[in-house]
Image 1: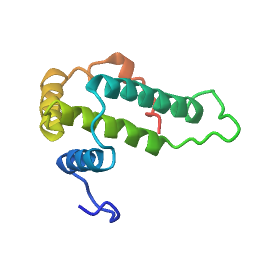
Image 2: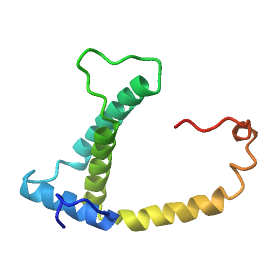
Image 3: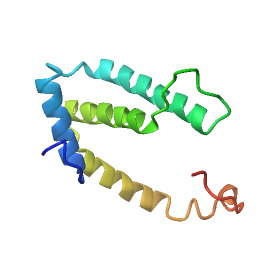
Image 4: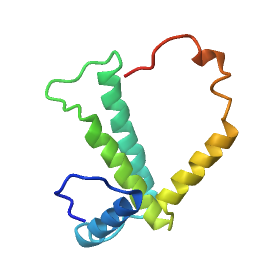
Amino acid sequence: MDITTPGTLSLDELQHIVHEWITTHGVRYFSPLTNMAILAEETGEVARVIARIDGEQSAKPGETLDLADELADVIWVVAALANQHDINLREAVMNNLRKKTIRDKERHRNNPKLSDGRAPQH
């Protein structure tokens, strides 16, 4: 896949691209424990950006607020962890969606906290 051409990207392709990049440019995978720590760090960076975009906190002088880039960092590390544990993310997401559909089919519709008439944020 040519990463310079815009288009769609499947989860299978994402995992392949992450693997190829790590094994050619990154030398090797970090340990799963290190990748878990990196995932926590990247998740914190997402929280920092959202706190400044949607919350009451203001950005520091010169601070870059690039939510798309921070979310991409999270997805990258998730793909790396999935690769390290031989997890096919496409299959995992579809299984998770089936689970949620069965378990939560009526749960959210029946939640009075969600029926207050307020529009969702963004």
